[in-house]
Length: 478
Image (tube, rainbow, N blue to C red; front, top):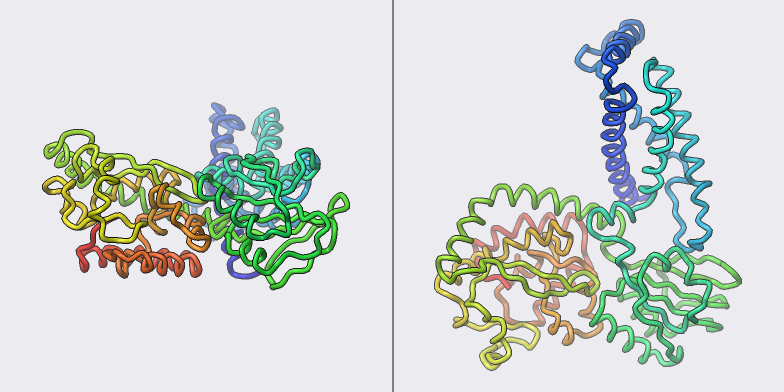
């Protein structure tokens, strides 16, 4: 197992440890013992007696029921993670044949046997038998829900049921629409395209991708035994989930990580080049949420002061919403402190002749739409602070390419569309290097560099350098 997998399982283990320990302590206090005060005293006396007999080096402050429960959960999870049935979920199986009961039964038997052994060894002898039975049923349900990263991702803001897919040449009544990877997602389009026309396939995907959020692309290759190098490279560079269905064995032009499954007489080839997905997404979100909560708490007086300043200058509202393009093309409302006069964004088209930058980047030197004092907020990127709320909502990250307007996406070529496959951010490589640039090619360079080299350590490095860059360069926000 490589280092990334250790990180992945470690985070999942930690989350389950916190959830199961918290729930077990709550359930123990409110149901297994409830108001039976003598029950606590009996168990504590048993624990102290065992301590004196078997491990007298443990001090009294560690002889607590909650500590024993946390220790039991830890040992149980170590045992659970040593099994294969819990750590593997096959997305290329039929959703109607998930065998949930068989999976649940395995977890139930392991949990119940471990729990009973724990209660017997440590003499938790006065718990309610009825509520203990209910407890053995509830916990395996929780473990089943958290068996893979989908549930955790949903809690953190990225639900698989909100993801969308398109199909190419897959019949409407195809049995493969019942695959687990497809059935939980929403269908955008069912396209019929000549498989020999690579350009048509790529253009169709690009057109939909620029107008909608697309997470998965399913292509039925029928009897084809290969795809062109051009189309293959295009699909790999999309940084999305790709599922190819073929009746024959297919030959690829390059080597890449994929999974092949034979099902119902067909071959399913699946590869997931989604850059921020699963455990990677979870870790990034945990970091984002943790840092954002701390920063919002510390900057609350600053946020209130800026709000009052804007109201005194130009009235309400002091925060505006702008439609921006997020992860995989999802449209969201981005928050900013207002630094321009009311309805200034509606004047953007009429002032396009003043824009000296590329058609994708819209910035005007000495913009007349900015009210007195607004320039100071933009100079130190203080107007961007409300986007911390977007980060908490899961629409943005602390680090990533800056989110652009929906109309700007229409100018992207197929390569630059890749910027939509990572979460947009408050800051990024551009902001710590040449954030005042008005050249689109510079944006493109840093966005592609970030996407091609993305890692959590890169995010942390950018976060560390951002305050220095703001103060050093007197940078203006987007």
